[in-house]
Image 1 (cartoon, helix red, strand yellow):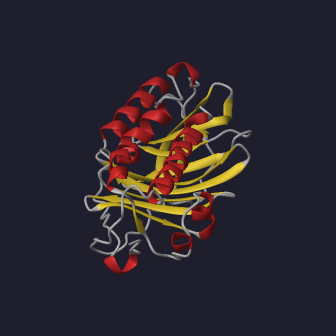
Image 2 (image 1 turned 120 degrees about the vertical axis):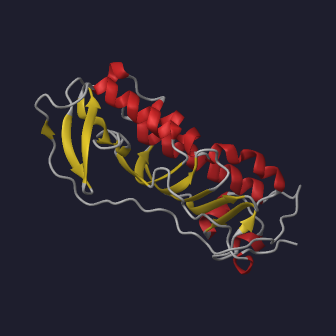
Length: 256
């Protein structure tokens, strides 16, 4: 189960870098058409959790909880997650919210040594905001490297990549890292941010990863990584209207 968090975030980092490179492409001149106001990334609650306790017979089977949590997550129309993971010794922090089909998404990601980036995908296009380190890593033109907090509109060719931004795509990759055979049969209980959860762990123990699922709706609340590959992602806003909008035109820099 230790790869749940790393799979989820690694694909986001790779996508941000790919879009960054696409935004710098000279094959398509970005425009500045955009409307609405910027939407901040979703932040999941990070309050301390109570110690886990073993449930005395009331808990469903671990495999059933896993199956239902996976089904509910993949069937969700939208959702949000936030947290950080260690990938190859580097810390990656992510704040994601988006729809299952990938048509709308707002992702902020910070990669140790590679800078910060934010990607907003809406019907009007894909917009990318990056700090100087991020754009320098992409080999961006000097104008882009000096964009400050302005967004760059990616070429229309980048629109085909937005399916990779879908919540469903992320979750399929994450759940692909765990099978019922890997999960301990022992189910415990723990409160996470005020939500009463079932806790599933790797057969080798919580130190190899854990999945927290709400008791009332059987929705994913938290993934945690292993001691050797630490990380935590907190989930929220399942099936909610996330209010994602394109950045205002004044926030988008023209490259013409």
